[in-house]
Image 1 (cartoon, helix red, strand yellow):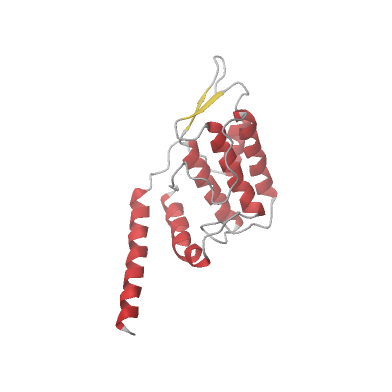
Image 2: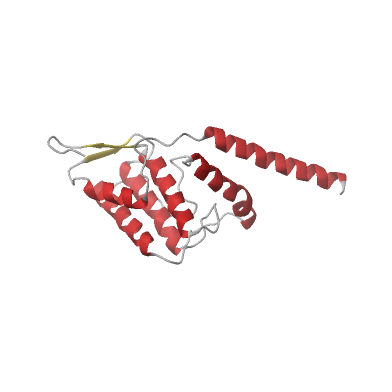
Length: 185
C-alpha cells in the first residue's frame, strides 16, 4: 500500500471514530415522557383536547414542529426531496443511525429543516397540524414501500419506525401542553 493511501485511510478512519465518539457522548438518555411506539404517539395526540394550549420552547413554533415531523413521515413514504451521497449514507449516515438507536435517542439541530423540503409555514392551526401528523403516522403504519432516508439511506419498516420515534421524541422535548382547568392528561 502506498504511503499516501495509508495516511488517507488512517485519517478517514480517525474521522469516523471521532464522529462516533462525539455522537455517543453527546446523546442524551431517553426521558421518562418519551413515546415508546408510534401507536403511543398517535394515542397521545388523539387524546389531547382541542382546547389544549400547545407551545414550543424552541426556535420553531409548535405548529412548525408538527409540520416538520409530518414532512419527515410523508417523505419516508414518497421520497425525500434531496439525498446525501450514497457514500455518506453508507458510512456516517448509517453509523449515526446505529449510534442513535443504541443510545435510545437522536440529536440534531432542532431548527434545521429537511434538505429540500417546502419551507415551514410561519403561522397555522397548531391543533390541525398535530392531527395531520397523527394521520401521517397512521398512513405510515399501513404503508409497505419505503423510500431511502436522506441521511440514513435504506431503512426497513422497523428501522424507520425507530428513526421516526427518535425524531418525534427529540422534537417533543420542546413541546409543552397546558390543559384547561378540568382537563387531565
